Amino acid sequence: MIQQDNIRDFAVAAFRHYGHTRSGTRDPDSCAEVEAAASTIKHLRVEGETETVRLIERVYCSLPLGKLKRNAVAYRVNAAASEMNMDARTVWRKLAKARRLFYAYFRSVTESCHSQGK
Image 1: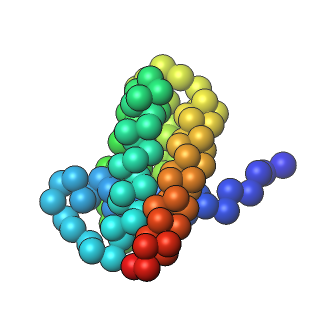
Image 2: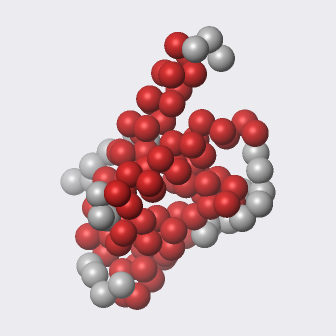
Image 3: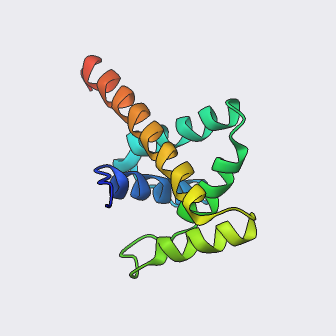
C-alpha cells in the first residue's frame, strides 16, 4: 500500500528553488518557500541530522527548474543511497521527515506574514 504524501510536490519544488536561490537565481514570488526550506535545513543541522541535509542537497537542491523527467527523483534517491551506503527506503524516510518539517516551517512563515498584514 502506498502512503499518500500531500505536500511532497510542493516541498520538492521549494527545495529546488532553495538550491537555485543559493546559486544566484532569484525568484521573488517564492520568498516564503525559500525561507521555510532554509529554516528546515538549519533545524536539521542543529538536530545533528547532517545526513538528511546531505540527502536534501543531493536529491532535491540539484534538480533543475522546470518540468522533471519521469523518475528523476527516484533515480537521484537510488544514487544517493548507493553513494552514502544506505538503503533507498531509509533515504525516502529521511526525505519524508524533512518534507513534513518543511511544511511546519512554511505554515509558520505564512501565518506570521498574514498576522502582520503582508
